[in-house]
Image (cartoon, rainbow, N blue to C red; front, side, top):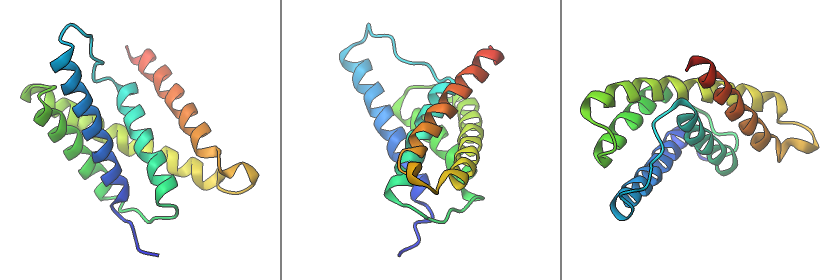
Amino acid sequence: MKQKTYFLNLMLVVILTLAMAAMVLLRTFGPAMVLPKWSIPNMVLLSLIALLLDHYLAPGACRCYICIPLFAVLSFGILPLAAGVVSLAQCWKIALIGGAVFTLVTWLFSSIQDRLSTGPSAKLAPVISAFGLYLAFQAFAGILL
């Protein structure tokens, strides 16, 4: 099996690109529509989608844990700026928060999956744990705000 070391980072870029394209299209064709804000639960949702795709499309892939925060900061910084969703002043804040959120979610999701990867419920366990992590981060963001 080939090593898919950077597949998780590629999935994050793909998910963020699709989200930015959707936001640009909605802003273009529905200018009165209220678009979602850059919040911690939304960043967690995008991160969990990328992690689920990585888990199902590249099972057992080794990861470069030094590159995950670096590529996450670059992805969360460059793609929203290129799509025109954020200004340059907001770009730094979103990049740092997005990188920290993606790194933390990756670490939590990976540790949960290492413990739940056996047994008959191993097929559905990633989705259930991702849902639980999303709800936990929503509660955490509610406490912060």
